[in-house]
Length: 452
Image (cartoon, rainbow, N blue to C red; front, top):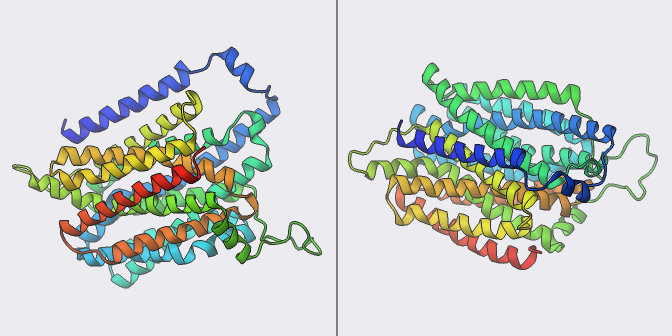
């Protein structure tokens, strides 16, 4: 068993231990739970269970389709297609540029024509992005990245908007299902799916001897998700939807674009969430681009080092770190109640900042790898924390548009960073340094504005 297999086994064991503690050990006695929670009717419990099952099934399929591609996006372009790193960066940049341009319009489309409809469109556009890898021609690859960026904007706005709006509309909080626990479960399941996707994609590539195989498997999952959404989900809308049966807009009239923009710019909490989204998620996406060359460089620097790395297993280990982070979120927030999500986020930003500095000061493959695992653990705690805060702060009627708008500076940030990319270690270290500094600033601003 090599080093990466041992690391994966260790992290999965820790995840298993925390899962057992949460769901079998428990942090509250039954009589304590009875005192803190109102009685739940069987009907409310059944409705909450059905809603959770329907949403999480699609969520796992969709995220699985995304994670299957994760370990091999860079390697497919760089190694199999033999493209220069500047061209690879341009392909990534195209995706983020597409996501940035479409960010607001995707949210507006989802609010006006329905979040379910937007999710169906996502399944189609992301499938097109997957199939584009079958044609190793630059125009087709760039077109695929355009569809990929558009799809990513939909994925991170429409699905969550549909879930949070349905949660409030159905009154699921009265059924004992908290929004924070829902986001915690989502992140945990997302991590499990990502781990399985990493291992499965590694196996697919070994069996088929082509790095296109995970992308075809991804398209298959999207087709299944499309069918489940089409047949099982109900539709919900934002304030910009106006039914043909409604004669004239009244109090529920559509919210103009200027009003949504004014809401984002004048609400300090939303603006700070946008700052956090821009710099933390931006650092995360840049990490996706740079972790493979960073680890390869560290491995090559070792005595008798090799640049041939088990990318699928490393990716699965990173996802085990994300799962560990989500389980820690559940423990700290839902079980022990030691921190609020906003307080936790300030710690997450500071820790992530430190982890990105490590590969700059150390050339050890082992230390670099573990620092990346710490960063991924921060990612695992970040998603449920920020999801819970956005669910509380942003109004349902403009949710998808605000979510889409918050992704615009994020995409611009990543586009600028990738647009300046250069071959070699120097630029990569500069990116890690800048991201680390921005995360420190974000931690301070977030603590001052949002923390309660």
